[in-house]
Image 1 (cartoon, rainbow, N blue to C red):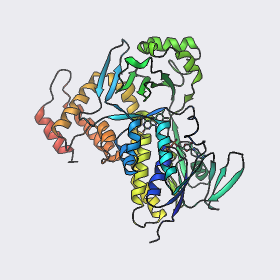
Image 2: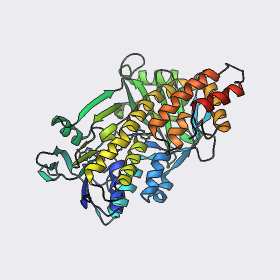
Image 3: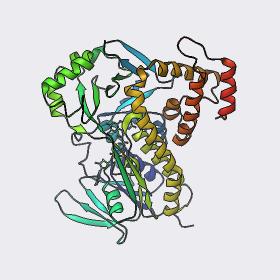
Length: 447
Ligand code: FAD
């Protein structure tokens, strides 16, 4: 079999691109990493991107594989559960898991990206070229086209290229235009807007939690930052009532927050000004098929499969992509075989997390306040304690069990949900322990 060429292009030095560059350099490849932004180690972060992200076991495992976890660790703030805030100001913590290590972490996107780029750039085999905007890939001429900072265009040889240029991937668009891949974008009819809760105002907020103000059709969340501030994100329909369209004035914004999130008003003294100044972001799912053209181009991370952020898994899935590709390049497989094996291994998992991410929006904005949901969640944790080798709540499989693929978490999660509904005896009633044992052992194979 043909050994892989010793050089590779990566387009996009975001979270996945920078990590992949590091992983591939560690296995001896010479990597050229192209990025349209300036060097983030010298420039201010781009406006309008989510400021912090939830990092969980899948992402941590990939960072560990790349040998970079020790440098990332100081950036991480543990979050032990969801702090659910009701309209009347009551708040209660719903722990994410039931073991000490079953926590997730808030991490600043810009800080994490800076560390990954720095680690990649310090590696002798990685050349990072900032300020280079990829305009697309042309497999017929086997070239990638770029525009540089002065507006000039140039091309470089294509083979092989991994495109990690994010949800709006220019490489994906060029392959789609050439009829080489099919793309379906499903836009959510809810947008988001980020607001900063300054450190001085945030003292009253529990730091080791992901805060949620679920309001049925919409929600506000907040994640902690290392400087003591929090980043809050409002998810709201684009049109209707309430909606972003209906929030055209400072008075309307203040009225919505006074009615729905009154306990946040002291946290956001400059609410109306921030609301007017900050961009409104769109959310969607990108389905692409296939993700590759022979051994020449591979789409990876959001470029292949962007998802909505409600399971906090887009970056985690992109990092898992990176380690899986690295794993598949072991031995002397060629790129075409490695790209094909990568897509075969990842496509069903990407589809599964895309679906679970949408489903989790309902859970976050509505179900967490529902008595039946809270009861079944307690029942699920009880079953996990009793049958740890068979029953693991779906949320825990996704967030804390990277050894369970997303598609398997989706499949087992559906079986478990039916089982929980059968066992749920209603408010105040205990489930039948013998029935629980029978259903769990009959329906759930050992993990
Ligand atoms: P990106 O991080 O988008 O990186 C793409 C890179 O390519 C960027 O550096 C960009 O500048 C560069 N680029 C783009 N176009 C070009 C071009 N033409 N030429 C050259 N370079 C280019 N995920 C989680 O795991 N947990 C969370 O809590 C979470 N929260 C989120 C909240 C929000 C509001 C959003 C929108 C997303 C969230 N995500 C979360 C998802 C996460 O941000 C993405 O899945 C992740 O950034 C994907 O990484 P990537 O490297 O594939 O793409």
